[in-house]
Length: 226
Image (cartoon, rainbow, N blue to C red):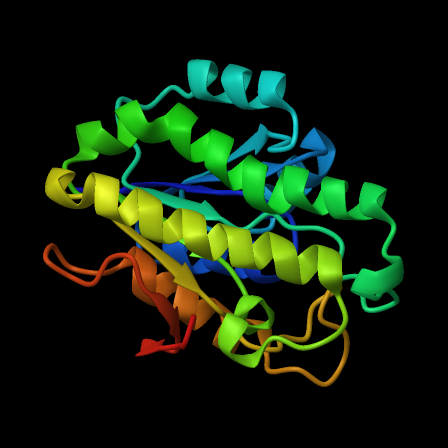
């Protein structure tokens, strides 16, 4: 059966590559972006069944409307990829907490509210997969100085991953966090691994079989320390 896959922040970078590969594999992809024109332009450049949709995960009203208007009876895969503020210019001691709040609104609460909104459709799938695109910068095991807004938001996203996985384990929904690694995107900058390589971790978690791992933190299919 063709899967229905929702990918947030999918008009560029890792999200766009994940959408491209899912569509090429025969899945129906709901490609979302805050700007509907960017979503439409990105979808037009892909092959397969790709539906562009406007979605701002930081806006509760946008999430509610998106979930209400989604024309599918189920969602098989949700990729929470949308993220902002890789704040390399900040330190925790002097951070602009307004920037931190904005990062949390998208990177944590955006993923949280969208997962809640789509849970009925994920449950209808019977084989739901939630992939939270995190980062090793949010690992407490290697935590250091810098990028406080981004790092704190990813630590919190990892915690949410474990809680959702524990609550949904008995319903056939697998919830995992993945780190794509340092990827050459607009956010990651030059010098990182190719976008297609970064997308592999996301696709691995999206394609897990029933009975696969849940509540984990992975890169390239290998567990990372929390």
